[in-house]
Amino acid sequence: MSPRGVAIVDVRERLFAAAERVLAREGTAGLTNRAVTAEADCAKGLLYNHFADLDDFVAQLVLDRFERLAAEVRPLPEQAGHGDVRENIARVALAMLGTQGPALTATAMSRQAVVERVRQAWEAGAPGPGAVEDALARYLEAEQRLGRIPAHADCAMLALALAGTVHHLRMHGSTQSADNPRLIHRLVAALVVGPDGSAPAA
Image (cartoon, rainbow, N blue to C red; front, side, top):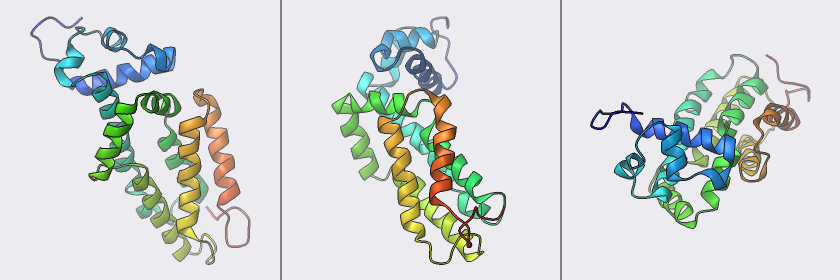
């Protein structure tokens, strides 16, 4: 355990990572201040030194993970013309779902104060699901200009369908991440086709 008075480097991320491990092991009911700080191997009061309460902690965890996701998917349109179209999209969808996506979303949705804080942050401009949808749409439009997906494809609607379905999986899907790659690849294969109706050219 960290000695009293010794600063912990990047304490927020240490606590966030610990919370995700607790969720993976114990589910929503197991996410408590005591469980998180014990998992992070730090003093019980540390979480409240950095967050107003457990609701604030969970809200900040959700917002942090969406901010990281937005940073990860932002360069996607620049990858047009490189690699396999479906694999590029599947990689983003899996990142959006995340290893603990369903469990984290279930935890957030079970706490009304968390839902409200996240909503307010998104309304104020914090990155949310819309950032992923926008990156997907711009990527698909770029691939369309290169002729790798059909000229008649509605890229905005494809992006909405992809992002919306992944959001549904976050909300209602299995917390067992082993199923996620199979589901995501089936989803992408069903929605994204090449100009001749087959898989897009790699």
